[in-house]
Image 1 (cartoon, rainbow, N blue to C red):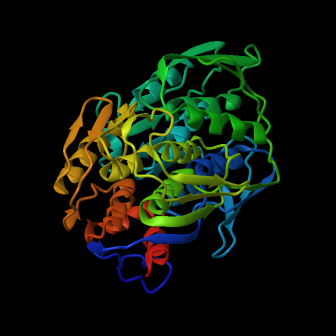
Image 2 (cartoon, rainbow, N blue to C red; image 1 turned 90 degrees about the horizontal axis):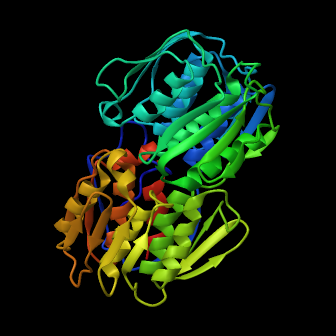
Image 3 (cartoon, rainbow, N blue to C red; image 1 turned 180 degrees about the vertical axis):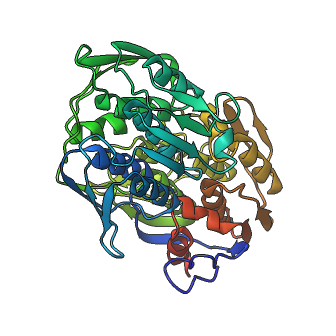
Length: 446
């Protein structure tokens, strides 16, 4: 795998395909980029807060660029400190300066869903669009909850899906609202972040009731943790009820450092476990607020040797992966990497609780099954599960990526089986990790 001329490919210079390997091992240290989930939440909260916030280690990638462009279009002033991932955000005290705008939000769910809720609660005249795949990703559960609060949200295409139009009727912050949680936790997170913006003196708090279960619950915990950092405390009397104060307003925490991306850590930790290691990731550790650090525990249960520090996690090869059934409902993004380690296990591996894969950048259950079969693996799948049998022999294979960054990064790891793997459209990693292949090359260079 020849490295790019710099730490990442220049804009427009990504090759149509990139061949990786064969690779014989992996060892070294990777400084993780900032978490996408934390970066985009903090950018929005800082924009809505009173005061100026200095956000350190903000992810520099397509999804955060989408959020930054949207905030600029809404009149928010954000200063970027040159090549350093530091953003100085001048808060708007809960009212965007621009009340009419057309926002293109690509395929960034962490931008589209929270901005929909915030703009709907504040009121204005906005159109929110994205790439064709974004228009296939459901948003109806969030829209229903916002309409119940009196917000004016309309579909510009198919019912239940973007693109959306938002009208001038602001959200009321009614005393109680229900929202479905079985499809995506981003809907609940978006609603929670928007509710403090409601100006309703008669309803000092809104009770949010989650029905039909809640997937990816740790991501909601990220949301409430960050809201607290910005001065708003969400009370959770039980696992399905969230009490949010309305009309209180966010306040700047001053300076806030973004954690490294725990989902991105999964690729390098798996590389250490498959390729010998040790591989250490820095920027995220045992006390992370991200649920995907639990991937390291799952890897340890599979047979890897895992060590933790305050700001790092390390993985090395232990026993061969044991396979079996792994409940992935709390680590849906990192769980994709377990479909790769399954190829190296001693028995089939079944991943459960992954229904949310179907509404991501692509239908990840179908896509993962299709690409795994190209290597000769036996794969079965259902609505919310995937079963992968181990491989004894690996052959060179060309992997399609479906414009999905995580598929590209996952399948690059198969090269550690000592086989060449060609990744079509490697540039899709720009979404969250533009320098992924450079980091992998340094870890695996003989």
